[in-house]
Image 1 (cartoon, rainbow, N blue to C red):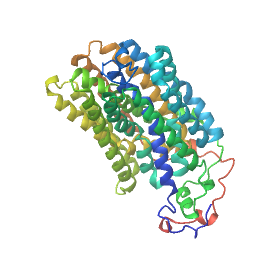
Image 2: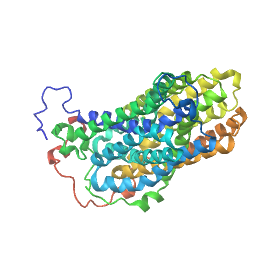
Image 3: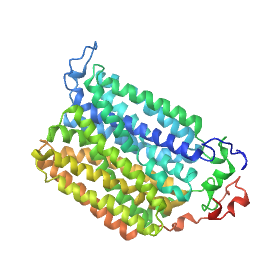
Image 4: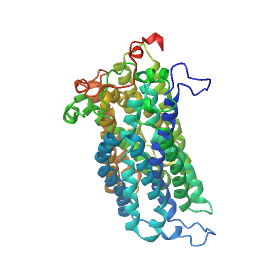
Length: 467
């Protein structure tokens, strides 16, 4: 670690945490992208493409609704199976090697997807299962990056970017998949491109990331003080008070809001292309852009709201969280209900409603996500890993909901799905606003077994004006 005066002239001096933030965000998004590919390629795998590529089998693969649901559930089973083991692995070995291993599993299973799909359906299910296993590492990684690398003043920024993996993945995957599916390379190339990118990103992760900022070779005393300021003493291997967290009303409210938001997000990612193509009648290549553009706007609003959540000082943290969560869930819930009643011949209005939903939910990082990290503090990785578990449940419930209701792909059937999501978002927000707080929970005040090392006493005494 460099001394205080050895920051040099580099523009990256005292900014290593932003590089970690960027690499971590892209790696998390890469795993999500690998998971998302199948959602789009299924609408073009069965379509004859008149490809000149020898051995092109794209016109021979056509899955039934039951098989499509099994494909979705396979990933959910993998994520559910891996969520708790990954929590233990992270505690024992840290995020550097464990998250790299998850990225390797995701990359290998993605590159094997076309072979599995053209060989036997069961092999595709196995590949999806391993994609789900790697996805189980995402949310706990978010928690560890925020806890170890973000200052308390920058929780909103870190959360806004790290939790944007779904939007980033869709922004990249949907247009790329749409263009490649329509090209002479065929749908198989979509998987190979995604696998190559995720491999490169996770090699970069392993090279640059460190579990402890104090161990990073380019870390300076100045930046380390900024990261640690106000966090107090943290035990290196502090045991997570699981039962206390599970009984905490604020955490339960956070998880309920997360369930509504993740169900909504999963619907757009998993069934947005299907709804736009099969119900509203958009072309395949246009469908990718119509899903990706709203997600891009979502990301823009998410970053803006994350920064605003950190910079606004005329409201208390509790008030800010309530306002941001209400914009994210209440507004999107209302427009989800409206979306169900827009007629098919007004498809453009449906796109506008989806656009408003995506923009409003961008404020979520200043709502329940920020509440989770401020209340759980050093145990944020566990709280966020349970959001991963909730996302697994949404991966189960969402295909089941659509499978049971949308048997004929009529607008009337989709209306029931939209209303279900809308009401869930609205109820979740009301409960969250009642219990929301910014105060650290009682379970964060347990005595530390091993105090944080390599933090000079003079840094701990610095005031806010000495930043």
